[in-house]
Length: 502
Image 1 (cartoon, rainbow, N blue to C red):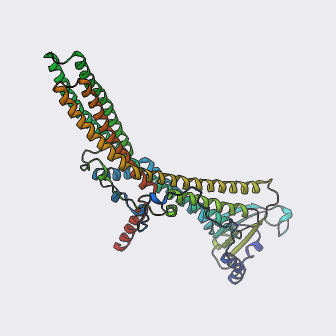
Image 2: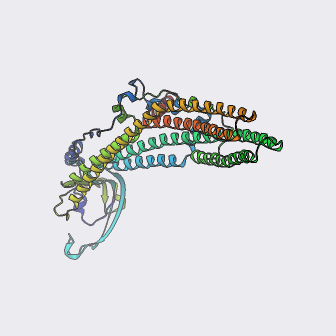
Image 3: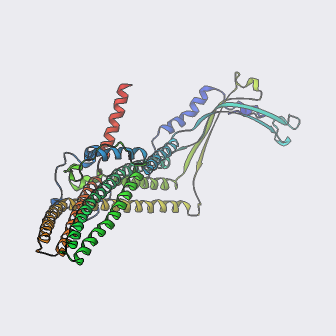
C-alpha cells in the first residue's frame, strides 16, 4: 500500500530491518500458539430404544456388508443395469445433489481461509491539506502534502485464542461432509427407484401378456358357446356369460396397457431420457434378477453403513462446533492489521534508500453491552444442537424400522409365493376340468365362468407378489446402505490408477 503524507517523522517511524524483525517477533510467536476451543466435548448419543431387529431375522455373517456390495453386483438383470447406469449420468435430482456437494465444499474453503492471514500487495497515493494549527513546520509551512506508499499488507487477521474461527471452520467442514453423505443417500435412492420402476414396468408387461393370453382363451370359449348355442345345445344365458367374460377382459386389457405405459413414463423420467431401443435383453421376470443372499450383520453395524445416519451425525457435529463459536463470542477478540513496504513524499524516491516503512496495528475488542445478542446466539446454537440430536435419533429409528420391515418381508415372501403358485396351479387345473365338464354337458357354463375368473386372478396375484418380493429385497439392500462403500472404494481405485499412470 502507498500513502503520501506531509510528516517526514511518520515516514521514518519504521526504518531499519533489525528493529522490524524484533518488533514482529511477538506476533510470530502469537501466531504459532494453538487456540483453545469452547465447543462442548462431543459424545455420540445413545442408540434409541427399539432401534434393533430380532436375532432370528438376520444372519450373523459380518465378513461383508451390504454397503460393500455394488449395485452392479446386486442387480443381475443386464437391462436393469444399463438403465441404472444411464440414470446416474442423466438424473436431474442426483445432479442437484452433487452440485450441492460442490457448493458446500467451496463454502468450507471460504470458512477455512479465515484461519490464515490475508496478505496482499497494494499501492496508494494520498493527497491531503493540513490545517494551519496542525502543521509541523508552523502556519507558513506548505498546506498540501502527498504521500506515496507501496508494500505488503495484512488486514484484520483474528488471533483465534478462544477457537471462534476454528469452530466456524469445523462447522462448515461437517456441513460439507453432511452434504456429501446426502449425495450418497440420493445416489442409493435413485438406484432403488430405478429398480422399483423397472420391476413395475416388467410386472405390467407380464400382466399385459397374461391378459392377452386370457383374452384369446375367452374368445375361443365364446366361439365354442356360440357354436353350441347355434346348434341348440347352449342357452342364451350361457352365451351372454361367455360374451361378458370376453368383454371384461377387454376392459382389463385397457387398464393393463395404461399401467404399462405409465410405468415406462416413470422409468423414462428417472433415467432422464426416453427408453433406448438398443438395451440389452432382460432377464426372466422373477427372483433371478437379484442376488438372493444379502449379508445383514449385527444391528450396531448399521450406524456406519448408512450414509443418512452418518450425515445426521455430521449435522450434529456441526451444531456442536457452532456452540463453541457462539461461546467464544463472549470473550475478547484480537485482530491484527499490518503493512511492510516503502513510502515517500516523492514518487521517484519511493523505492530509494531510506524509504522503508512499516506499521503494526493490533486491535482488541471486548463485548460489554450487546442487548442480549450474544446470549441469544448461544441459545440458538444450543437449540439447533438439540434439534440435530433429535434428527439423528429419528434417522436411526427410521433406519432400523426399514431394515426390520424388509427382513420381515424376506422371511415371508417365499412362503407367500409358494402358496400362490400352488393356488395358480390348482386354479388352472380347475379351469381345465370345468371346460371338459361343460363340453360333455355335465356342468353349466357358470362353472367355466367362475374357473376362468379364479385362474386369471391367481395368475395376477403371483406376478404382483413377485414384484413385491423384488421390491422388498431392493428395500433391504437400500436399508442396509447398499453399495455406497463400494462406490467409494471404486473411486479411490480409479484415483490410484490415474496417479500411477501419470
